Length: 226
Image (tube, rainbow, N blue to C red; front, top):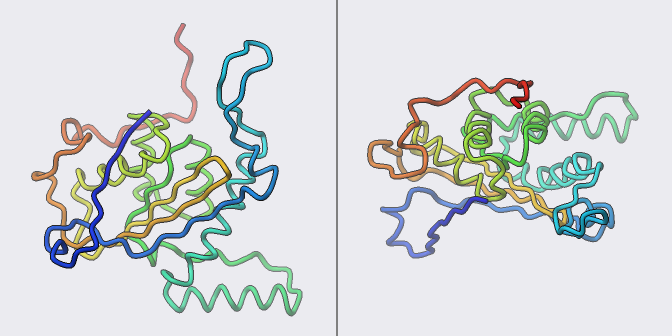
């Protein structure tokens, strides 16, 4: 398990010493659907009588649907007009004129400089990298967090942001998109804007003692050691 804490303030005079400004949040909850509600549950194993977490085989599909709903709500408030028009034209062509074309996937790299994606597993990261057409550079904080700390649930988003800070990547005005998943099934987005450039030399975070050793190459297949 991991843990993270953040101090939020709505006082105007705290602006000068703040690192980030929270620009937008979107919370998607699919709990009204039985499949979504039951895809991640804490329950007792029928064989061993031990309490654990049960994951449905439909988890990735359900997560994809929750993300799609979340992005549909978030997109209009963060994407440039050009991307919104392309999406609208494609939607009209498909729905009104019945044209057989693929849905247009907006280029979220035009809206954000940094992506912090829930490091729940390699499969989740691979799917989001593919569907959002992100680069290895964009995925690096999430993959290195999963490699070093494992699945730390929602706190992984803050380990990822700390990674970008330790690497000296955060510049004034940069926009960060945090995407989190949870049982229920839930998908949450938080959009931040950097109030100032982050100097790694002045930071104290979990990465600073060995950030120079990252990124590391993580093989897709590793041999088992007995």
